[in-house]
Image (cartoon, rainbow, N blue to C red):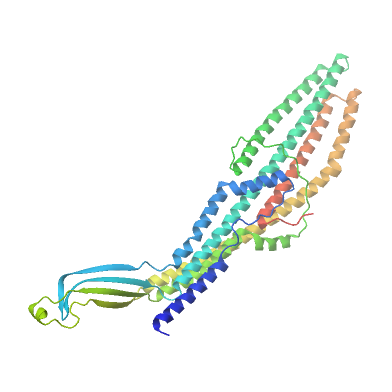
Length: 441
């Protein structure tokens, strides 16, 4: 095998190995299916639309696509150099004067340098891919939070309508009692003031709904004023996994942790790449020297063999890596970057565990509170209101007692509706913390 064939074989094998590495190191499909809890079909459609249209998601996607293009650039050889040299005073030789020279040179870094550059760029692209997926997860969580808060506001508006209807009924009773001399005009006035208070609360709730609807629309890259239908409160699932298992799920699926792991691997390879600078690089070149024919009397009388024949040159060069302090600084920089990425991953994991624990505690607390409301507080206040209504109709209690019982029931039902939305928000936060949906009953 000739030296030329050997070089071609080595280059071919290196290219094949690098292509295989790139294929296996490429991130998973770009738009992987997102796993999230959503019983309501409208919520699922909102989430999928936001993931497809949200500008933040599209920005992160474009950044990942840009990062993918760095690996081919990092693996490429430097541009070859084509040079032309014109002799201002030609050098006379036996076969004629040397007129000019055309030279083509190519630089080659030390063995393995291009492969390491490509691997570092690939890891950076992988980290950008996981950050893109994390942005998608952020958008999913924000859409769900806005949806569940909107469900609470709609539930509160429904309760306000019920309260207004009930107060109007009480107002009619008070007017009848006042007309028959069994009640005071003050009772009618107090009920009318309470109805006005409910109207004002409805106004504030509608303003809050406009804000939440605008947020949901802008997350989907739609006009803020687009109408959003009334959102019903979703059924509440039960968490079916222990906290320690959630930590393991987060270790596997949290995108920020996977991005940090990719950066750590890239930094490890960056250290090896920095150490390559201690080794020389090579330069190879080939050229053609233009030689003019003999024009002197002796040359014309008796032309020498190869008169005026152009000369072909070959050159080899090697760099001298003598600036050792610079190379040591490069290795130290890459080492510190590795340490920083490791600490960042540790901090990210700590934040994941804290988020999981916070969400689990909130879910447990809200579950306990809703059980208390459903089994004790709401039945008791409903019974108390019915008893107060009966006593009011017979004149045993006044309108203030009736209003107190009605307000207490309304307040408890509002808190129960708030707890239901907060439970689903906490479940959304838990999904975001672990990076995927969690097992539910």
